[in-house]
Length: 338
Image (tube, rainbow, N blue to C red; front, side):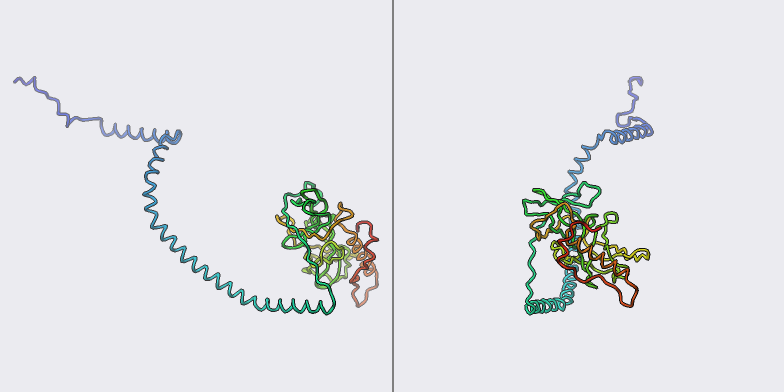
């Protein structure tokens, strides 16, 4: 057999393909292309979603032991916390037991004293819950709008309180809503009583500082920072005993007969969402103003007494405003106090 007829090519098993470097460059370029295409057109997103779906049961099975240990640790931690809360509650109950017993004793004693003095029990004030909808659009006043109106029995002059104290007074009523003038409004005035000295006064709103001011207070009056002021009930609108404000600062100016007393209201005029209306007013003669005739009369009487006290010669006895105002002076006050 001639040698030229022999097949000199290697068998297919030993055939050589592209070189290793060529394959490296090809696959590197393919990887870069796939990464760029996936980042721009998200070509492999369906593949990833399928793989994640297939592997999800396996992931949950692997996480089951860890979740069981975590739930067990939280269970024992919750038991310890519940025991600690129970212990604190028991200690608080024991600490308040003495106060509760004293409260019952004082309540019983108060009822006996009222029966001995032939005093009538305080009338329960009917109330109506309301929700603040929005602030009034008037930039020169401090008012809010509530979702209760004439249909629900609201009348002009009804006091409004929140969980901290007196918030304001209803000054305009619509069928399904009402406007409430806050105690920080410049037209708001509340007759107050100093709990420490039992001295009466009138607190006016200060919209610039969002606070209040106790006007017509003589420079030598016994007022201190931290004194608590409550409603006196002289105007017949606000029930007595409602917290109004605390004295924040006292500025005794030598060039003036009156001291400047700044107050911090208890009620949070910027925060309340739910308020309570005290339905103590059935009709109001002038719903456009928040200052009642009794408040104006109180202010005028306090101003006169403070002016006379300031003009009196200095003696060893401190001059004070009168402890009570004559009821007959209220109808004579036809306008607002200055």
